[in-house]
Amino acid sequence: NASQVGMAINIHKTVQMCINVNNQISNDNLVVNGQPIAIVDDFKYLGSYIGSTNKDIEARIGLTWSAFAKLKPILTSPKPTVKFKMCLFKAACTSILLYGCEAWVLTQALTAKLDKFARKCYRIMLGICQAETHMTNTDLYRMADEHPISEMIRERQLQFTGHCLRMPKDEPANIYVIYQSKIRRSNRRGNPGLTYLDQISKYLSTDKTVRFSAEEIANYAKDKQLWNLSIAVHKLPAR
Image (cartoon, rainbow, N blue to C red; front, side):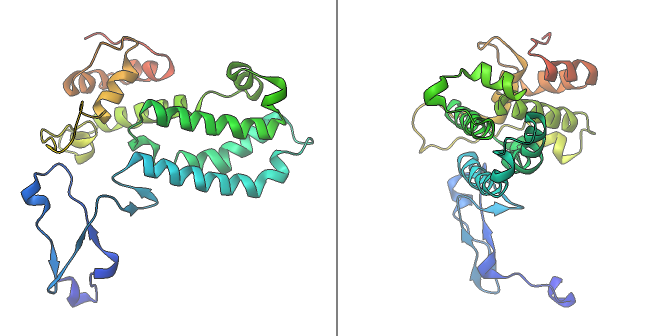
């Protein structure tokens, strides 16, 4: 039907990725005009990698470095105030770094990597030589009047999740924002990896042993005022 109005699928620019399906289904190729569409583990869509948070973060850091380098003469100049530099960095660099971060599932290593990258940028902008000053991270954040990047990600993810969970129940965003597949890959070793649901649950509780279910999180999100309070400060919601 699409070909009747001049639309056609470009086989060379089209791929397919299977998520939350068993091996038998994932091995079935889609075919267009007798040509199979390649099966991939990851691909880029609207500037973000769909299948890998790690790969997406690597790309984001690289793009942010490029933007930072272009503005380096201004960001490292002694003339602008610290406030101006941080505002410019947020607008031109942080916006690139955190693009699509609402969907990231972060390990401790990735969280540390993002925070370390941001601190490195702050030190360059403020002319701080860490080898000479040995400035603590706390003092650096205070001097820059900033919070860790990981805290910004936490706030954005909670805002996004709460917004989706307050949508009508038949909305796809409401259904799948903290959806957890019942299918587990049999070829993986060790403990199952962190899920988005686990991450949101961790954000809502200061007790590491507590894990909230999707239903509990959805019910908690209905109270927008209480949910926004949990974004501003770490608070254990009533179960």
